[in-house]
Image (cartoon, rainbow, N blue to C red; front, side, top):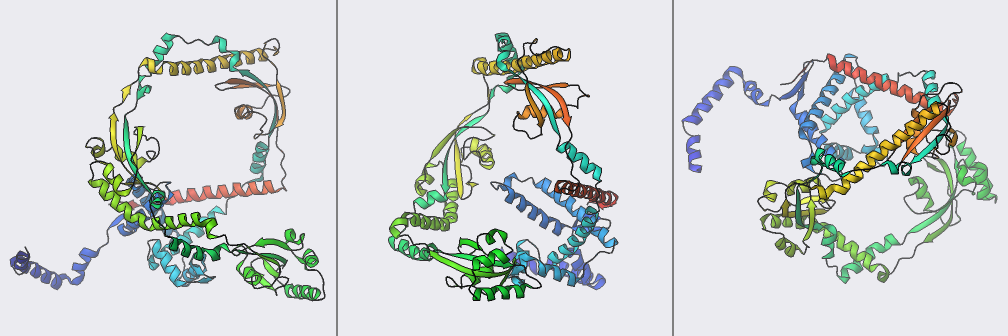
Length: 617
């Protein structure tokens, strides 16, 4: 074959290709050749500007990964790639429209502006300072180049400026806020009459003919779904760790490593916190002079500290280990000796004087006390290192095997069984959609193969095979008779309860009393709010869905559940109080204004999108 290639490379075909290249270069130049191959394809054109296929595919990949991350059990087969591509393309079109609008309004950022924004972003900082290596690594992890990230920021920032300008311009009238508060804080006076299901039980009869008719009308509901019984083996980190051996030497070494971590030191601190700003240095100096003259740290904390909670305790903060306080505070505290007071320490909260009250260190438990725990930790650590390799070997072995017994024996796993798995799933691990889909695939269901090795959880992988398959079948009347009877009794009970409630309401509206209606007694409730726990949720929903009664009048309603009916007599609606100077009113007004601003921005987006000229190849 190599000889054929050599001959063809020096033959007539090769010479013709070279001649064509020379002619092309001489007539049109190199750009004609390179341009013909390097022109970047587009997926859409928005007002004459292209959205490139490269940008589109990159964002499709990012969005797919985001949706996988949001899954409880990530499974790429569950992703709707068509919908993802549609959503991404629409978002790119919308972004292009907004970017063009920002350009038309003269909004843009210079390179210096972009640099300033990037260097101030906390995710790119180390110890409070911009770190270029972290910046580059973070951007690359996002699937972007540095230039692409800067361009994305440039576009997004000006879009956000327009969004913020419109969103913050929303206005909500005081009357709207007052009306909502009046409704939200509204209370109602009402009475409730409860009719239990037992009150109508004697009226309920279900005949065999009715059961038969219900069965005939709903046969599709009485089918035994298609099912399979399956055998499976499961590889988990825990099961792998059980077979890992940890030597006494390894355990001793691990214990020595962990000993320093277990010998935890905690320090009891007290502090005086002064607000940073003008006069802070003088205040600190005054406190230090008074301490030097023998005054109590606790008394001075009560007098000066703006941390009012600890000040009441003489500045006492209790015991704490490392990683609790502000870094500057922690560094100063752990440099002190018991009874010693630090100099002025600046933190994000203000300026501190810190006193070390006491130090305590926890004893290191003996190896005999925690040996089993450490041995398990070491086994799990080793198992984590082996898991990926063992998983790959198990996947290969299960793929090649005619059953599960061989792979199970090879890897020391137990073959287990689950029955009655439908296409909607079954008991764990067959509550995993991807595994069930594999189980019902043609190769597994009909050809007798094992499934692929499926990851059903964090470090848990399963391979299964079908042991038995049962087609869907119609259940007989005898199988479902009592179930149908229960359904019909429930239906008739609700109907009878509703009719009884209607009868009582009609009597009350006609001027009769509960006594003459032989209907029991009212339960009275006054000034009940929407979230009252004194009445059932269904009754409260009925109460607050009823129209306001006329002056000195009453309005009746009912709610029916499976076990009771409730008749409600609404006597009065009390409007909620509104305090225009209160926090609740201010927060609601702000929320309504924000809502209106968002609505206006959404309308603006839609306006730009509607007038845009979008072409798709």
